[in-house]
Length: 431
Ligand code: UD1
Image (cartoon, rainbow, N blue to C red; front, side, top):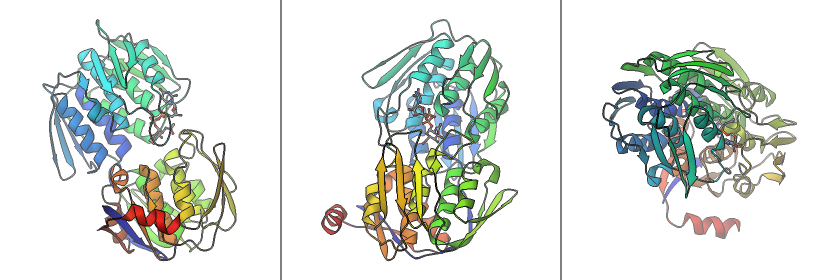
């Protein structure tokens, strides 16, 4: 079994180039189906969610080449309408094929991931958006299907909640619909802004970019295009959380500080010293973070749910009591028992977690249960004494190209080792 071994009490020092954004590139890959031609993307991270999306595109008939960080999709003959449960069930982003396939082929049938480890992931907002544009939809046995026999027609779509995925699906479908659509109450995450610029670069007509009200002029002719993916704000936030937990002095290149609104303030509250420069972020911190009285996840520009477990890991060594409330996904505290194995003092009740910061955490055998929770265990490990061994690397690889390599590049001892019986040791040693 592959294990990430992280040596603790390790301050981070040096420079790192941040990978391209996972949450930006996945909807762009879905959007490449809208054009019967070639789309090129650069700065694409080599992560498992991207590989999964490539399999889906190929299953639908696209030709994909991925060399280094340059990805080329030729969707000239991608006329499939069905995404199998095998791939659809693996990545949440496959749901974005709904809007893209409806727009392109007037029909879609996709396997759904169903409930996943961070909580239930319903699709009603996606369905409602597609229905507003004239499609019929239904969900049956972990499949979501939709058809628009006469094609999609521009419409007004109002989101009762700023869902990231539903906004992206609505954008893709509206670009392929006949006529103008008005999308109100949209999510405003930087990845949605980037998707809009990507679509515009392909020839789509979109106004209101960056706001919660988007106007899409559908049916415009699309053309071959090339686009560079921005740096990943959550990967950058992961490194900043590591500095908050273990101290250090780092410079992150290839990422814009403005995309980290929402978590920036929270890093300052933990005592991190941050400096924003064009295309890079500098961060230094002492060995132990300050506690945060209350941290609440919220849609952008609020504190991101994707950063919640990373902050929780850093706050385990906070100087005092912190409280963290999760409002987006109900089960996103699966990391808590694993942090407790390292000596953290955490109690959870009704979506509120109370952390009593400890001066000392100890290395342990732990297991990643989800993507961000896995990276958060590495963050906690850096502030702990001794070595921590983290199983479940496949979760981490969904979204981080080379987390062990990135940490090693910042001067800490992190490596992937082969270890049998990790699970037995985890149960034996810590009960
Ligand atoms: C969410 C996060 C996004 C993060 C991503 C990966 C928010 C608002 N969204 O995006 O920042 O990068 O996870 O971790 O923080 N919902 C419904 N019906 C739907 C769709 C969603 O009720 O049809 C609910 C979900 O149950 C959840 C909330 O809306 O409580 C957020 O969902 P949404 O933004 O759609 O999730 P993702 O697109 O996965």
